[in-house]
Length: 410
Image (cartoon, rainbow, N blue to C red):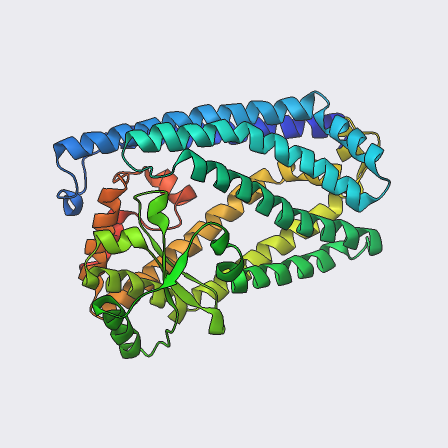
């Protein structure tokens, strides 16, 4: 394809992505007029349901506006010489392809960060504050923003530099070698995430001895699951929303409870939530998800290798010659439709995994407790009870709340 054809292909893809997301948002607005499923009729009283509808509508409008700004900025940078300008700066700094890639993507990332920052501030201190979720102070928000920026720059910079360096050493086998390196890095992060990243933002403390820990350990022993690491995270300093998750594997596996979860749920309900998480581990969903990620990354690296040396691709962005960093930037835009399809497939698989984990909890007698916990957490977070089926199919990694409750209560 000619550079002009590639130019217009990128424009069409960027615009189509926003149009598609807008269609999904409008479908959800339409679906919000549907009656609440009978199983969830007790979730909200009339006043609370009006609040949930207002919260959902506010977030939808916000996503349309922020998405439009992001789309316009991307189109502007691409169509009016932004990539070429960033490339010129990168080349003026160093002749090293690795340094050029870091400078080019560093500029791009910083611009994206500064543009998204006002939206993050508005979401936190206006929307979340208005509906009673925000507990973040301006000081904590600023600290989080700086730490997130620096952490992202270090991690993304390390991965980018590694890939660029591999390309300079072995262009022919770049896609395979880079994929292997990134896969190893992903394993490392999965294994040590709780020890390296989480402490930068949250304090994790072992769950103290008492009724809750005894109940969790008793259930773990009953299902033959070795569980030594149960931690509580101080999420309440940022939000009133609650959650629990599993992280790591092998000796590094641990269960993490939000402290807000312990405020909102009974001991039996928390055991129900953790039974679901143990079900994920019993079915090896963490390993399967890693393998899915490896497979999709392999496809992405292989496809990128077909474009990495294309002068036409670079010319579409206004640059004179192909380079690792420019071609990666343009390829990332062209890759969007493929990424969308892969996300749909991944979400289908994820929903089946969630169903298996729910089945594990139900099979071990805590299905009703988990269902009660899900309803409480959803009510507390003003969750949408009537998402459009197409939105669920495309975007949801979990079955809907109504489906999960019905399944658990069978």
